[in-house]
Image (cartoon, rainbow, N blue to C red; front, side):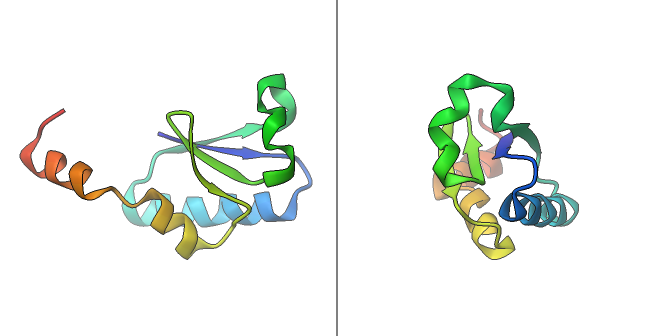
Amino acid sequence: MYTLIVRQGCHLCEQAEISLAQLESETGLAWQTVDIDSDPALAKYTNDLPVLLEGGKVKAILTSSKAALAKATRPTLLGRIKSSLHLN
């Protein structure tokens, strides 16, 4: 599950949400949006919005490009191997 950190009124954040929604419909990508102002611990990302996280790890910053977000969410080689072998 990916988490997109956004701020209301941020144009790049809105575009990133559109791009992720498109990826969701194309690939089944699971993601959620969290407003940076809802959690003080997220303040460290203030200058980098939008920020895409996976399991707390930063996968992309300052991008709303569908291509860049697709690349950031592409499974690693090890992940693809595990998935093909049905290993957890």
